[in-house]
Length: 105
Image (cartoon, rainbow, N blue to C red; front, top):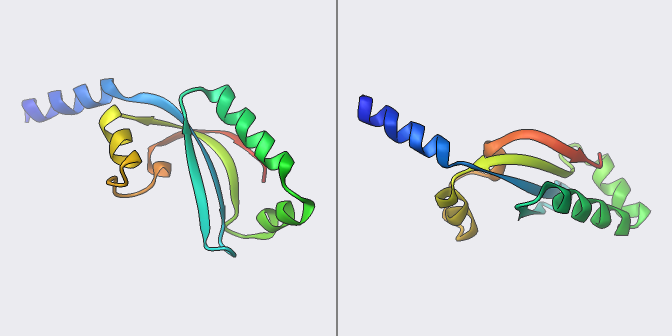
């Protein structure tokens, strides 16, 4: 049990903050995520993406009950991030969320 605790403590210490831009519309059944190392870069990207949308597209996100257009902070180990980037991570990055940063909706 002591060895397990040390491994968990080491994994916790290795976690790094990353910032995820996520957009999703249930109507389209699709979305995307983009991971940033820098919070300001993530927020700037999200705001630029939002501003580039037409009013019709913005309305589509806002009227979709499952619609998302946001940036949030995660804490993740380099190994978990690599597994995510290679499509091998079970689950979604939202499971690593520590706080919300910006939300257009």
